[in-house]
Length: 373
Ligand SMILES: Cc1cc2nc3c(=O)[nH]c(=O)nc-3n(C[C@H](O)[C@H](O)[C@H](O)COP(=O)(O)OP(=O)(O)OC[C@H]3O[C@@H](n4cnc5c(N)ncnc54)[C@H](O)[C@@H]3O)c2cc1C
Image 1 (cartoon, rainbow, N blue to C red):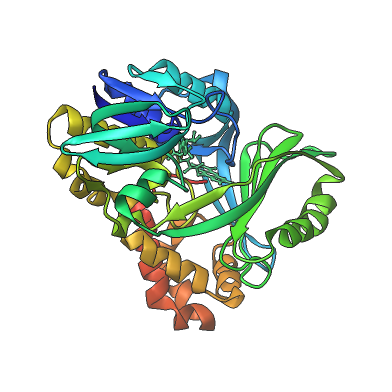
Image 2 (cartoon, protein in one colour):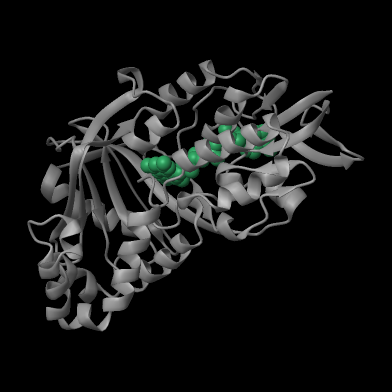
């Protein structure tokens, strides 16, 4: 009989397991960190807030610029000294696993969950059963805990992503993001450099993602970086909407992607997974598990406002994005908070028409965004 069973040894489960002693982590995978289904971008500030010091052992590239390209081809540029990193996720998770106090048991898939009085009974694919007082669902976007215990049905989005080798060098300090409502509806395309010659390139959305990926590679990647080789398929799914879901019930917690806690605007979820795993563990340790959901929902990265921001951003036609890049040419996004910036917004017909929605979007993002990816 354990105090806590955590299902899933990704960022959420490892982060919870870092703080809990009388605890077992079960995961179906053979090796921590594998397979990678991620673009591997993470913000430096958020990592440090979670008590993780950046370590060259798992940093692939240091990022100081994010370029958001609009359909006209113009970029909106966000600069900063070490904004974040593109990491080696396998090395990163192995490093997290070393900090864990709980026992980790791999190659163990959870197939059933039962509530017997005040006890959780967790059954594995090998027919073994474990019992605990608390259950932490950290089992990712297709979570069995979310389906069986909570019955929640969040929004699930597919992605298509490859680790790619490029013929010509890429600036490995710049993350590139491409928005185009017509070519890549419901999502965006990203290029996250892993080195000067390799990058994680992918996109999310509904419909034929492979076709859109090929279009992007032929029309954007080839002209800029020459021929490319597809090295590894690192596609996966993401789910969001946790801000509106039940996240605690009968001493069971939903954390990370299991709780659909990814940033609904850009889809990053590693930091959110780590924060929610830590908060679940803290609630257990302080014997206040019932406060978990309230605590999570009061934190900026899990605000329902981000769902509003997501709706606003992905509803803009290309004309709005193009005009935005025109007034932000060679300027920081914070220019929009200045008098000339507001004047700039009002001087363009599409921006004037959407002025209040744009203002709302920027205010929400400024207040709540904790990660990129
Ligand atoms: C293509 C793509 C790109 C992304 N890019 C970024 C990015 O650049 N930056 C960023 O921050 N986020 C990114 N994300 C999101 C990020 O990967 C997730 O938010 C993050 O992995 C969530 O961590 P987690 O611990 O909640 O879940 P996971 O990392 O999914 O871990 C869940 C674990 O549970 C295990 N598991 C599942 N079911 C069972 C079961 N029944 N029994 C036992 N074990 C089980 C799995 O094996 C897995 O190890 C991306 C996602 C995708 C799909």
